Image 1 (cartoon, rainbow, N blue to C red):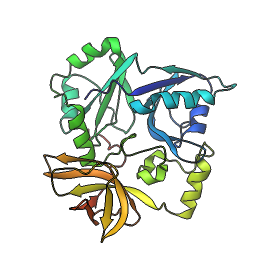
Image 2: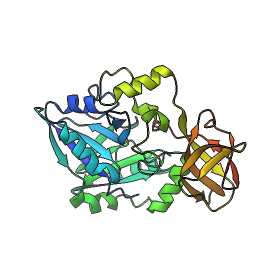
Image 3: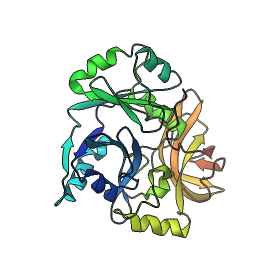
Image 4: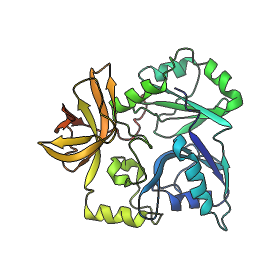
Length: 303
């Protein structure tokens, strides 16, 4: 799958690790070259600006975000660089990326002689770019990033892979319960509500929005959580459709699509706790179904 429009912001300089550590929800200062993590960038009110994959290289960090967040996160980071030794470079237009995912992903990469880092968000150099263990859909895979000039050569070695269009990728992502910024993660969302707590490091110290995150953690729970949906029928409800449990309004759909493989509608939704628990019977616009799990951290690749 092609990911050429994803935002890619490089941060270099002696203070880059400290700046990103103070502005994101995960522990950036403990990352070593070849490692990475999933994280959120928050407002002072604890709301999500965007989620990101942050990768550590020997001389810089790379912040990989959804296309909708690229300009916003660049401006957000730039605003907090005052006397810091940090230089930002927007590589969105000059680099491209594509992802190889699914049960045969490792086989395809091995046949092409491409390295396959095993641990989530670890990465290795390849060709003129690098390959990282992370996926869009949640089924497990690797993301390859190269300068745009090297794209054709990089793709030529992947003859064993079948290119998926955006709609097919979206179907698999929702089958797996993987949320996406702009569809399921919004600027009004608290990070804990997304069920992606692998992006939070509760003992790392102060960062923008940390006070709100800690307040929620000490309280013990949030009032709503993201959940997967499985519904009968073939016509998916629109985003914002209300969800009923025993006749009571308990939440709303964020995204939904028909899955030909599963023969049902799959999606994601925010529901009031405890109705988010997998297996809860729900009704959406007359369609009956149940809640399901949300995808968690990237799986470790099998050797």
